[in-house]
Amino acid sequence: MVILMSKKEHWEQIYTERKPSQVSWYQSGPYLSLSLIELSHLKPTDSIIDVGGGASTLIDSLLLGGYTNISVLDISSQSLEHAKKRLGDQARQVKWLVSDITEFTPEESYLLWHDRAVFHFLTDAEDRKKYINTMRQSVPAGGHIIIAAFSIGGPEKCSGLEIVQYDADKLKNEFGNKFKLLKTINETHITPNNAEQNFTYYHFLRL
Image 1: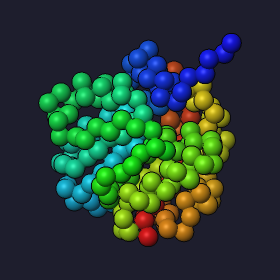
Image 2: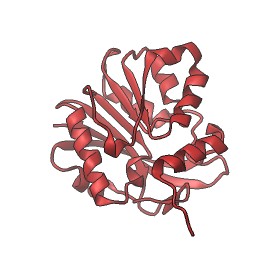
Image 3: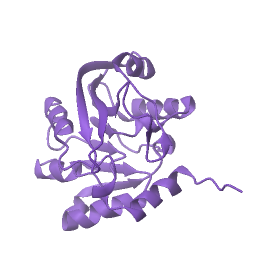
Image 4: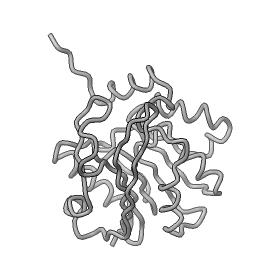
C-alpha cells in the first residue's frame, strides 16, 4: 500500500533531510528579488511578506537594508527554524508564519508580496484561486507583487512534485485585471548540482 504524504509532511521532510544550501532552489544571494523590491520604492516601515520564504536569505538582505516590518510565511516549520537559527537575535525582528498559503488568513495588509517558487507548485485550479484571493485581500491598491516561477520550457517537476510553467500572458490571465504587470526578468538559475532551471520574475502593481 502506498502512503501519500501531505504537502506539509513533504516539505518538512525536505528541510529535515537536507541543508538549505542543498535544495535545488538555493541562491547565494536573492539579487533579482532585491532589484525588483528596490524598484517598488518602499519605505523602511512598509509591510512585506515573503510567501514560501522558508530558509531563504532574502530576509537577511531586507533586514540589512533597514526594513522593519517583515513577515515570512512557509508551510514548513523546519525551514523557518533554519532561518531563525541563521539570523540569531535578529530573528526577533521578523514575524514567522507557519501556514499553507492556500489556507492562510491574513491579519494585516502587505505593501509588498514576494513569492519565489511557490505559485508554480499549485497545479490545482482551486488552489490557485485561493492563493489569488488571499493575495487580493492582503495587498491594497498601490501595493506590489513579485512572483518568480518556472518559465515555459523550464523544469516540469521540482522536489519530486509536478509544477505549472508560466509566461507573462498565462500569469496575467490567472491574476486577472486587478494586477498590472510592470516588468519581467528572465533568469537561468544554477542549482547546487549545476543544473540549469529557467525562471521568470514578474513585478505586478495592485490596482
